[in-house]
Image (tube, rainbow, N blue to C red; front, side, top):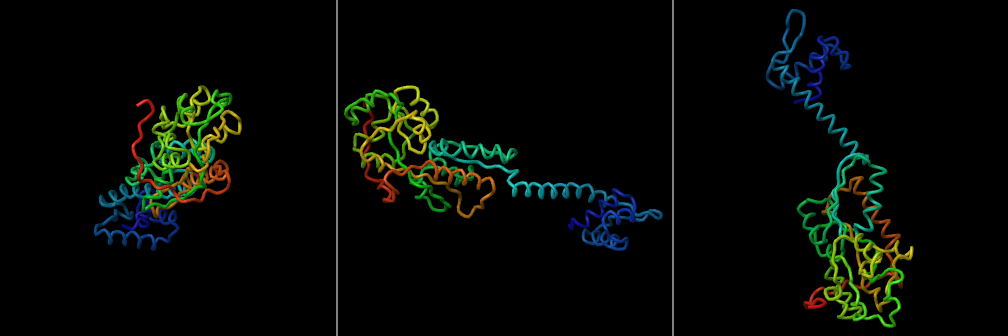
Length: 326
């Protein structure tokens, strides 16, 4: 059904005469009449009839006008919504974030959304990268920001990798461990150690770089997906925080936290990546998230001693480790 011609029939219904309807449609009367006749021929039913000297709608015509108004309204709404979506003033985005990514990237992203796109809808799902990737494949989230070692092993994703950082142990300024003459696992385990659930890659690197006693499964006593809560715990208690440096950079600059000087800690690398399903387009709202991630990569990812360009760790052969106190 030609919606352009349907608009002419609606104009006749609204204006009552061919002359007025043709004028409102910027057509001559003969052209307007041909348009109505063409629509009748297309639909195979008479849409108008003569009553005296007036052209009026038949029952078929009234039905087409009623339905046509709805269709034209929805068409106009669709065009408006597409314009707003293209301008970044409408739409929605569901973001899956691991704990580290949420703490570092989300605040900047959500501030930008609130300032620049007040009517868009943003929903955040927090969880492990593995669980979020399952949600991405099920199209329950639009994009995942998380552990790069987990993402790079998955085909079918468009992945952008941020600069590498590293994980370490952090304590509040004035923590009693800072007065200890020796830092080893036995000393560290006098205090609670808090961490987000570490990845297999991160655990492997900790053991390789610092020693088997530093396996997170043995070391960590408090596990939580909320990194903001864990940082606050480290600020206010003697709990030791195991985290990526990018997640505590501001607290280090403000001297709220101090990094424990463990040997080879810069080898315990973290890699944050942002991924969407392969071939999916980047909307203005999604581009805003990419921009926030890139800003975090430039300003907060720390690389002691230069770029960390060694190969990813081997992730097999790790034996189960008895947790502390077992």
